[in-house]
Every structure is written in structure tokens, then in C-alpha cells.
Picture 1: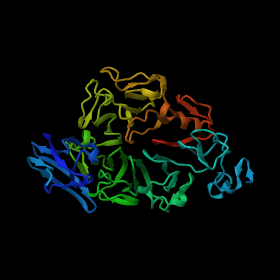
Picture 2: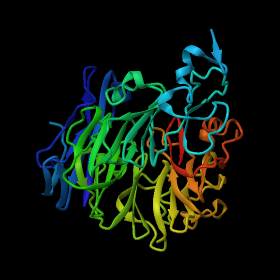
Picture 3: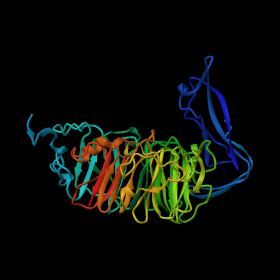
Picture 4: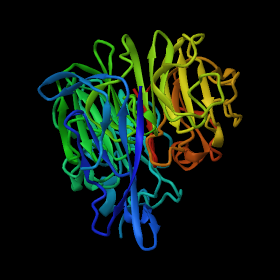
Length: 85
Length: 401
């Protein structure tokens, strides 16, 4: 079983919305903001907020992924992955 | 300015039939007869000043393709010939492709890419393409959603080897996701996980490397991908994942909930050969006897039988469109553009090329020399045998051998 956690974080005029972040426990995934620009973000009293979702793993998940050098199979233990560093 | 057949002589090398590398072609004022390829772009080509169609027919050439893939976002189409060579035809020059397509070749004519003869498949994402060459997966274009599946988001301005760890036999790129089928009938995906389009058990984030979908399908014979949904075929059954806003997945349910992972939609339907994500609200399936099954919204004459009646109820999803007849083989559509609303498309039915959909009315005008102006589904008259076609956001392309 897998769910998503949703986070709301403050962002700024110089925020790079194309940036993504990774989690070492899930080497085949990355996470990023749901919005592509400041204009898409919620504005409250002059402050801007973006959102992103994490992967909440509630039962172990096994995945096989391929890289340029071969195939890797890993099992992802219970936990929440993709929280912005 | 001197003119020949109404064309300024300084532009005469742009006119097929006068341009020696293009081979013979029809007059720009007539419909192609026999072997060759026609492309209808969505703006008037300036080198055909005598044509006053808002959307011009272009280009006529003697080149024959076995596979075509029109960009979901640009005036660019790639084609593979039966000899395994790769070609492109571009009327604009997106920076995302700027090494694969030199600016000097942005002339709405066909140009060969390289000299390799083992290209086998090609598919358009929104601003990118995927292709297979010698069993390896190659990628071109914008990679901002990890559509290349190689762990980075670097734009590939030229065709770049993405993966040859497995033997790939089919690639299907959606708007922001990639679906690949292996020679052993397994399915790997990458890209934006939104709406479960990648079938990885989550809608969060991106799948950065090509990863086997989480239901571990086997014996898959077909994959397809659209705006934020994807499908596979196993034993004639459709498996669906992702956005189901039609609802169009075919579950015999009116639920519009996203589908979490490739799931068989209707065990009673076992006659499907291929699926096509024509819009974000519909799906088309071609059956073993050449019938068309359809589910979802039918706006803008999206159904190949010309009807605009939706098939979204619990009882009529994936019904056979009896009015469309039988004999359908290949079908071409697109839902990989950002709007996901490209109702219409094309297909090959009983040896004839058929096109339709009022979203593409102007392109249809161009391809039929203004004989069809309504966007209604109709066959294109040609003495040749249809070989391939494709529909992009801004163009239609059809080929005969």
C-alpha cells in the first residue's frame, strides 16, 4: 500500500521551480514542486507557497529499474520518501 | 520576379518535383496519387504563395514511410522507412531538437538523419521523441520530467542513447511519461508520476530511471500512452493506468478516479490488438477483426464513425463502433500535447487512409485539396497503398507506398 503526503512550503522570487531532489532509499525517483513558477503558487499576505507530494510506503515495495549499465532490483521499506531536504 | 507555375523562381527549389533530392511529386494544387507522403501543417507555407488555404497542404514527396510520428507540440515529424532509415520533416526549429534538425533543413522537406538502417519505432512526447534503434532506446528533446529515463533532466538536442540494458521493441511517449515494452513482454516506465500515469504506485514525484511497472505485467503485446494515462494489451485485454476523466478506461463504471497501476478493464473484451490515446478523455482500440472500440468523450467528431455521442456510461464504454465498419488496421492519434484535447486522428481501413475530427479540419482541408471542409471522417483518394500516418498538435501526415 502506498499513499502520498502533501507539503506546503514557502517559496521566493529566486526559487528555481525546475529543481528536483532525491532520496537515497529510492534511487529511481525524484521529487519536485507541483508548480512551475511563482505565479502558480498560493499567495498569502505577500508570501508565496508551493506544494509537493511525498511517497508514503505502507508495505514494502519492490522495484526493478534499468540504468545504462544494467538492471537493479531493490525493496523499499516502510517510510515516507521525497521530503524536501 | 520571374515565376514558374505561379511560384517565384527564387523559391523553385522548394517545390517538390523541381527539387532534385525530393524526387517526383504532385502539383501543389492536386492531391497526391500513388506512392509518397503528404504533410498538412497548420500555417501557410510561404514558398507556396499561390495557395490561399489558411492551413496549407505541404509537402508532397515521393518518400514512403512505414512509421511516422508527428510532434505533439511542434511542426516537426519523424519517419522511419522500410529500410530502417530515419528521416525528419520540420517547418519550425525548436531549440530542444536543434542538433538533430539543423536549421538549414527547416524547410518542410524530408531529410535523412544519419545513415543507420536499424531504426524500428518512434513516438512523440509533448516536446520530445523516443525511438528504438537496434533494440536500444534513444531519446531526443526536452527531458524536464525525466522522460529519457536515465536519471537526469538534461535536454537532448540530438538523438541520444538512453538505454540498451534490455531489448526494447516498442516505445510510447505520453505528455510527460514514457512507456517501453521489452522483447520479453514486460513494461517499463519513467517520467511524471502524476495521476499514476507511470504505474509506479504513487502520484508523487518522478520516476527517473526506466522502472518496471508495479503490477509486473507479462506477455504484453502492445503499449500506448497519452496525456496522463497509459495502456497495455495482454491476450486481447486492455490494461489501463492513470487519469480516467472520461471516464474512458473501460471499467464499466462511471467513476472518474485515477487508476493506480495497469489494471485489466473488462475481462469480457479479449479481442484488442492495439490501443490509442486520442484525447485525455477517450481511448480507441482496434480489434482482431478490424473493428474500433471506443470509450469516453466524443467531442468534435473524435469517433471514427463520425458520431459525437459519448460512450461514458457503465454499459457502453469500449463498445464497438459499428458505424465505423471493419477492416481497421493501424490507427493514429495523439493526446501527448498539453491540452490533451486532440479529438480526431487517422487510420488505415481496408486499404484506404481515413482521417477525421473537426479539431483537424484545416489539416484535412489541406490533405484533400479543400474537398473536405467539415472535419468529417473520410477516406483520402489515392491509388497507392496506405503505409503510415500520424497526427500532431499542429499537423497531419499520411504516407502511401
